[in-house]
Image 1 (cartoon, rainbow, N blue to C red):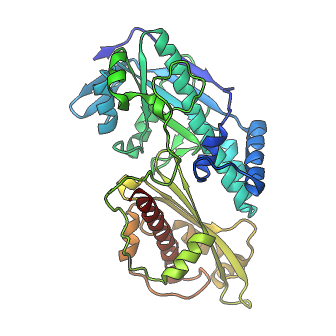
Image 2 (cartoon, rainbow, N blue to C red):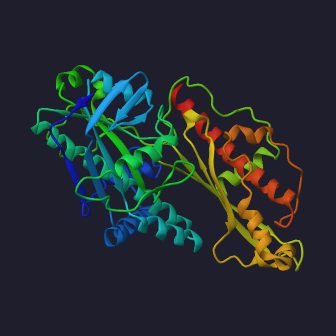
Image 3 (cartoon, one colour):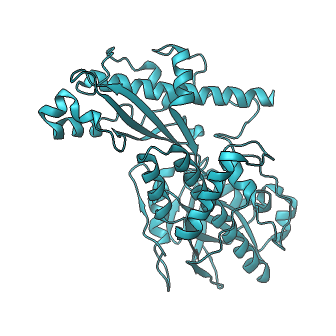
Length: 419
């Protein structure tokens, strides 16, 4: 057991949020060096201005009382965790302590983004969502810089942060980390946090992390992979040990000759041309720092009665990290904001509560990897409405196949760039 005499607890509910344009542009998915202009610049400036006026960012950091590594377990204040990557980092640096960090962009951002989506303003939704993600990254970087300053003055060094959901740390351990984080000393967490069954946090623009702490600063000079500076964009840091080398963000960092996760030769149930069109026109994908992906799909159909009234439903799917095979963590289907067509479906007119409950309850393939959709045998249904289970299954299949197709194309494009 390694005990620590020094102690640190930081709480900041008014941290400066100065997201670097290059970092925001990277999260938006633009190539490195791209300068925004036109409509994109207008939306980016709007999102930044909205957050400056309405956002409520916060930071919390607490030094753990004890750190112990035994076998394949990391014990932080007696709480066990299993992460080969984090354990390796701590052992290589001979870390004597861990610092628990929580940061949040505040729930206001995602609430406003949700309203924009329901108002059928997907561009505003996307730019505000990405700015919220950029704020979380900035707060994590800012916290790391503050910890570096404190550690340097005490003859120590801070290691790269790690979080549940990152490679080799199961997101299922997120509840334990949150429980540990709530064992605050003088101050409580600045904002309420809860963990969903999937391991995701609510509010989603929140991050829990562990920073290792070591007195062996010489090891960081010899082992460059232990230096957090290469992943830190805090330009004015006076303690920088290595230049910032972060690559432009993509759904998944390109790795030469990496093993295939998704079946690139998939035999889809629908025409590939249709999948390509839907991926371009109806689907948006958003990557998070923890490796998860949020997918949004818009389905446009018609009722089978009442002269074919148009209706629109939104599908949201959260996928786990690529390294875990893109497991389906969350699924939701609901009418788009302002849609009235669904109220004209025959089953809705007969029993609206029963129909909408069935739509909300059905989550086919939840918990399985995305490849499972290729083996899912569904009854064909050309109905545009949602009255029958077969038609609802058929639509879920189209949604999941479109997501599968889109991710395959992204991975093929990334691999081509590396070859």
